[in-house]
Length: 70
Image (cartoon, rainbow, N blue to C red; front, side):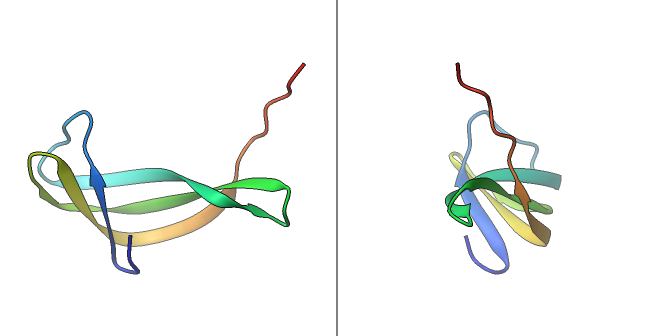
């Protein structure tokens, strides 16, 4: 991941071109308690046998829902 793009492994295959939204679980908690996800909107610019490259058009952090545990 960089400021301009994301490269990731494929499973299952994606179309060769087009728009995509990636929801990435962020490893750091907000204020030490809230889970986050990093939402990326972009364009698929390259696909090979195992990876896809996406050019980032926009991104934002969102809080994730917490699940109640019994």
